[in-house]
Length: 159
Image (cartoon, rainbow, N blue to C red; front, top):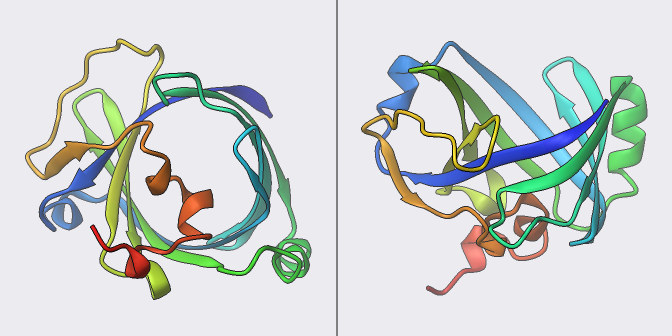
């Protein structure tokens, strides 16, 4: 399925999102290609596999083309073996807040300590209610892209 993905990304300032979460799912993902103009991701999300291609982000970092198809977990596992070096692991929490769904990713492994929230929007300047645990906006900051976290994990950041 293809669509334009419009989302904003934020750091998370407290663990209060866990009490508001509707679900928690373990995700394992790797990248076959991390070029900014065409990222190719393989993901195992719970008991399902996915292959996703994302295009380059617009200048604000909020919008980009996304194509995704479901594949078997076995296919995803085999493709993850072909992926670039660092495989990302995280827990994803889904939280309904106001009229939107926030997805909070709590990273594991080499990215442990990083917690990021995303909210998908219908259009770039859409107004949305922000939960109290939402911190600094990092939309468009490339180092927070999952594809970049697979190249330079959070544990290696100096700033």
